[in-house]
Length: 76
Image 1 (cartoon, helix red, strand yellow):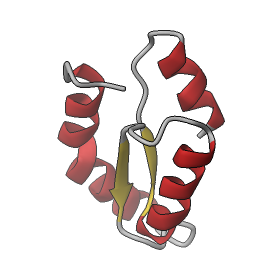
Image 2: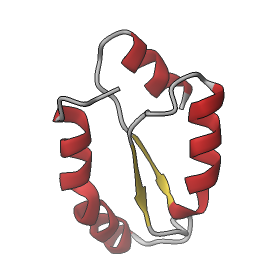
Image 3: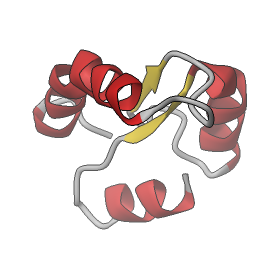
């Protein structure tokens, strides 16, 4: 979160990718860091025990959302 906020305030698009277990925590952290509109994309939780194929599937499912968040004009 800190790095993404730094990139955004320095005019470099950023998006946080995290698991759905951290939706609320990410919102609170973005607010605390002064950038509540920070782009966030979430993959299904959990990820720590996912095998390589499962992780690829999770990444494939969100890649378009990440690209959209990085390239949209309404970026933070």
